[in-house]
Structures are given as C-alpha cells and as structure tokens.
Length: 327
Image 1: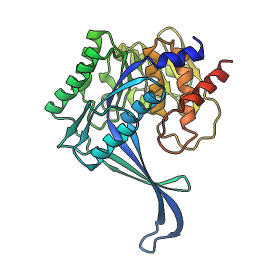
Image 2 (image 1 turned 180 degrees about the horizontal axis):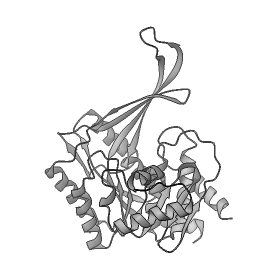
Image 3 (image 1 turned 30 degrees about the horizontal axis):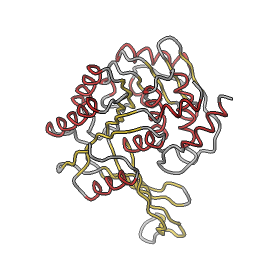
Image 4 (image 1 turned 180 degrees about the vertical axis):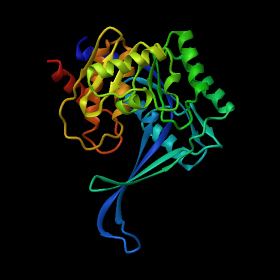
C-alpha cells in the first residue's frame, strides 16, 4: 500500500483505548545554587506544563494520526480529574466514557527538570484494583461503544494502576471475540498472561525478560524462543517486542525478524512505547501486514524520542519520513 493510502486509511479507523490514564506534569527551571538546607539543587521555576499521559497519550497519538478514538478509563473525582478532562477537551477527545471515582485519585506524575535534565519525579496515585461497581461501569461503556460505533480495534494500555484488572481484561476480551473486534495489547507485569488470544501483543524487552523463565539477548534466535514461549501461553496472533535503540522484533507465526532503528538524536524516551502501540493499533485497524506496521511504528517511536517529555506523533513529519524510508 502506498504511504499516502495508508495515512488516508488511518483517517477512517475507529479505535477504542482502555487502560490507565494520568497527567504528566513538568516543572522546568534553572539551577544556580545548592540548597543550604540539604545537598540538593534549588530549581528556580520558569515553566509549568501539563500533558495527557498513559492511555490518554495513546489516545492523543491516535487522534493526531487523524483517526477517531474513544477513551475508556477511571479517574478521580478530584482537582486533577477536572484538569484531566480539560486537557482531553483541549485535544478534541470526548471525555464522556470516563468514570469519576470517589474512591481513588487521578494519577499525577510530576517531573522536575533543569536544562532538559530530569532531577526528580513525584507520583501521586492509587494502584488498587477497581471496585466491582467501577469494573461493571467500565465494561458497560466499552460494550456500548462496540455495539454502536463500528470499532475496528481495542487497544489495552496497561500501566498496573488498577484499571485493567483480570476481571476487566477477561470481560472486554470476551466482548471483542463475540463481536469480531481486533485487540492490541501493551502489557505490564501484573496481568501479563491474562491477555489470551489477542491480535497483537507488544511487550518491551525488559517486560519479556521478567516474564519468561530463561535469559534473553536482543537477537532473533533468543527473541524467537521468547516469542514461542509467549505464543504457547497466550495463543495470540502477532508478537511485536520493542528493543529500545536496537529497534523492534516481530513474529507473525511464520516469520521472525528484527527491524533496526534509524539513527536519531535522542532527547527523551518517555512516551515512545505509547507511540509504537498507537501506530500498531492503527495498522491492525486497516489490516496492514506486520512488517509494514513495525516499520512505521519504529519511525514514529524514534520521532517522539527527539523531543523532551511525553509528546504525540507529528503526522506530517511521519508521513515525510515514511516516504523517504520506502523510496
């Protein structure tokens, strides 16, 4: 498929994102002295920035590619929750499928930076599983979208913050299988093996190493062994493993290979995984082959690493890079 046709097809895709959402707060300034109270730098605050994080950043990436996105999650009934909804609305993403909880806080990650260097991160969050009432509400929202909005793919974005419990995963996968909707997963450690029979499973190398009972090096033979182990456990269709600066490994059941990254000036790796899974979900939605999906996702993940903080894809830049890559 021509690059232009791929990007035009993305505009007709409908993706439902479910998972843990958060606000990424950045406090930036200058350091000119050490505190007299303790051996720590004093940051003279110059700028404060709030961005959508977690599954919301995934939704933002999908929106940036021109697709229609539906975001299902749970946030707190608090000030950060209000701010989160405002950020969504500013990004033209509908917040109506969010559930406000009086039992948990909205996750807020505060990063303190000076000269583009991270000095400290402070997390405010609750990581307990949702209550039964909240689980039921969340699954009901997903079911509603699946039955009326012609969703092409469900993207599970798991950060182990409690939204994607085993019960929620099982219920949503059951709905997806019943309705013939594709499923794409960016897993974390707690529920790693709960995502059975999904369309695409995308862990990173660190997660794979923690999940299998043998050592793994980032080469095709070792990664194939790990992928075979996962397939025996999950019976999924496609494996895509991100390898940081070494690229991505893909396995469609018939062919396995590593696609290297294009050399770039790396400023910050935050959010790269969100970007990769976003492109992967869009590729599955328009039925691209796994190699093309991985190549495009690789380009997109590298692109966001050139900028500081969690940022969405630049669609026009990715389009240009894709045309150069395949020329």
